[in-house]
Length: 424
Image 1 (cartoon, one colour):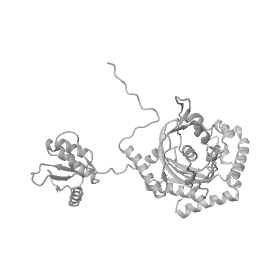
Image 2 (image 1 turned 90 degrees about the vertical axis):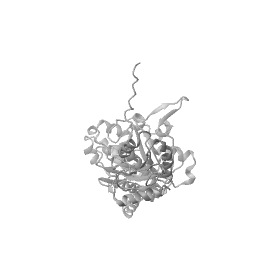
Image 3 (image 1 turned 120 degrees about the vertical axis):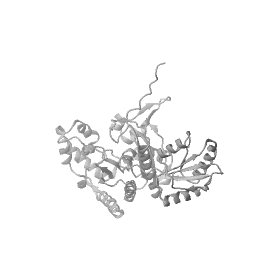
Image 4 (image 1 turned 135 degrees about the vertical axis):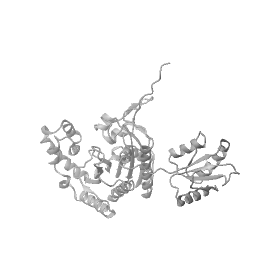
């Protein structure tokens, strides 16, 4: 019979076990805890949407829509797309589910996203993000709230060294339009010096030339006019309130006048937390204000601001969290297996992590407990055994204090165990 070959995993996907999975879970758990502190509700949106949702939100001519989306036709003939980002689906839900009644709405979610792009360090075709949004708040305080949330999340994850919040303003509609016209004029005057990608962007997305990584573009981009010369009084005041709020909250930031968002519905604040610890992929969290998006998708005029962060990138920047130490239950003899299972259930119901080996004699189960890094072994013995039915042996620390603590821990589960330090 021919050997059946197992297909390899799809390029750009990943399997996680052990430390990598623990770091991933720690990022998600920390995010869930911190977002609750700030009153952000957990929401869920579909993994796939009508293709039009993303085409309208991301722009038909963007690379994401034209080159990177996983789009397919279902059996009913509808064009569907696996979500490449969260904001569009959340905006769609805000419109179709009548969530306007809850505005201003503070929501958060996390989960998988999909983009067909070249896999590299910290970037996958199926990747995962954290996402936080405030919808229906036009005030700069909403921007500050999101940025303080992001800053606390990174601090609680222990991601502070080498990470910097960079900040810019894109102004209001009047400011942005005037700046865009000046940029187009500047880049047109140097069209023959621009890279092919930037020439293409000139007609579609001229602001993106400012953050081009192509060395041919840098002299032209660096000499382009800043937005400050085109800010209206209102736009300038908005940005000043955001930066003042960050200062009041103790969040450090730096101005990056070349930080942009190419699509027209972005207004005012744009920001990124960047690091030099991930090679070329330096952004660990980014976002901005997108006051024009919901209107662009057919909803009412609705101010909004949000950010997203790659879970894989954050997980690469943290140490694996300490695993919870368990107590392994070992029956002295096969006829005590049921008694050991009853004992294990008592531990777990008391909130004590416990495990039991599925096979092997007592000696083999002790080896398994050591291999798993158990904190202690709880031996289950015959009722008439000297010293009692239960015996606790610490594995990590044989100090008197540790033995006493383990004894008290096991007793909290209703198990009266003898605790010893010597070899058994």
